[in-house]
Image 1 (tube, rainbow, N blue to C red):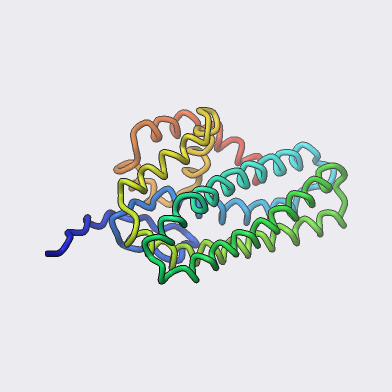
Image 2 (image 1 turned 60 degrees about the horizontal axis):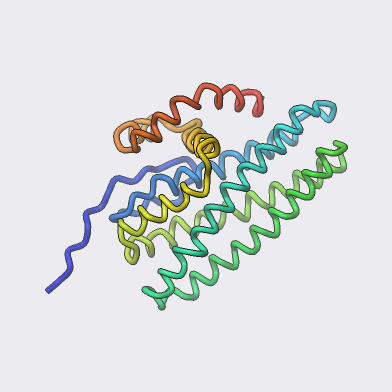
Length: 233
């Protein structure tokens, strides 16, 4: 007797995404988060390279946005470390080496997060070309290290999740992540992951996203777009 597997669900594909693996889990929020990390670290790097040293308001705004992106990244990786990885270690012992490698990449990412935060603190306090150079180097290393890690998650980690984690468990993980944010921060999160998406992904969200999150996005979207227009100008 064989166990019937749940049917595959539609998966989205975003710029920079390495794979969209078929399976029973809806990976929309993970792929949106990955897109947000890639998008914003790239834009932060460009903005830091171009911002006038005398434009202290925009420098502060860029530092604040980096703090937000790193908070989302912290919650993203924490949920993997405390929930996803233990389940996969238990159910797929043959993948222990790969899981160890992904967690080692988390530690390398944390190293560049620390360097980027330190460099941005110094640059924000007193912007100079020398401090800009240190910051852009740290941001570039963070973006490259995280980008390589996200690619491995999409090509190796997510297929493992599709095989060994149930839709019910995945839904609980999503609910637990949402509880880490208060209403204000959750609204910010929904605006962030829903910003500057391709038309086909917009259509997918209109068809499949929870109504409450679509409403939050609609309420926050216009204000968020104005902030981003200033930030990336």
